[in-house]
Length: 411
Ligand code: PMP
Image (tube, rainbow, N blue to C red):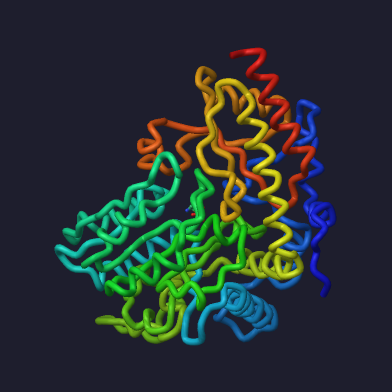
């Protein structure tokens, strides 16, 4: 099938983007780093499941259950193929990135890390890649080492990483920052971790929305990914694990479906992915995610990201000309995502967001679940406009004009 390289054609497949808000304004959705919108094909696939073959999986011999089981396991295959999972690697379905990172901490970390072992984190991490490791560190007496972020270049301090990774057992690193848009040099970070004998997990929540990740090429031990930022439904994500890791993990949640036999005294666990997926899984969500992947397969990802960057750069350039605005992130680079974080020197971030909302423009305000990074940048919050391929240059310009008006009127 021909690739969609015309972004207005891509946009036409997202019905919500035509939404008129209660105040009569046309929606300009610039909160894509929080969650992306969904194309009609994803909504249709989930609707077809509920109207045509809704049934539990893996449990019954009837037709509906067979159809649901087949669609669910095909979705797992589709995720594995999309992310370039090497043969022998596994897709463990979770509720999202947060759940995947927690599964790594409890299913792998708890079993394989011992008192005194060190974990390397960065100041750029999302809370979901901090709190699970803090909890584990408290329980198992682990050391957490923090890699510095340079507040001028918005990049990781590579020398600091090189010194902190020495002797560490695990590195937990954000692939692409949800605040700065910085894409970390993950291929090099993985290489350095492995050279010093550490395993590495990458938080790919943002990255998966903007680039086609290839796990075999990246060579990390674990990738944590989520569906809802890459045009799929909420409620599902995955921990992708490299060959050989599965055998080092212990299940975290017990119950139906993750066992082969249960006796009064003990249980025998499944030998496959189901070992980590107790209870009824996220069937409709897996089918929806698979439909999103099928949709993304038709999209020219390079053209889409080029377009997204053009809009983000256009907005950043426009904002820079508005008196009192400071931008956090370097938009002169081509390897950043579509986020533009900013603050005005006197207007409160939340007031700006409310005024933009009254003009139909949805942006995010707050610490973006990255408080250590906020402290490093010496702020408590930022405004964040995040662009995606279905946004338009008119929307990017309208956002800049709206901000100009707000600053002229209220600053
Ligand atoms: N990591 C990053 C970098 C994120 O941007 C997010 C979502 N805000 C998460 C983790 C959490 O992802 P999820 O919503 O899938 O749990």
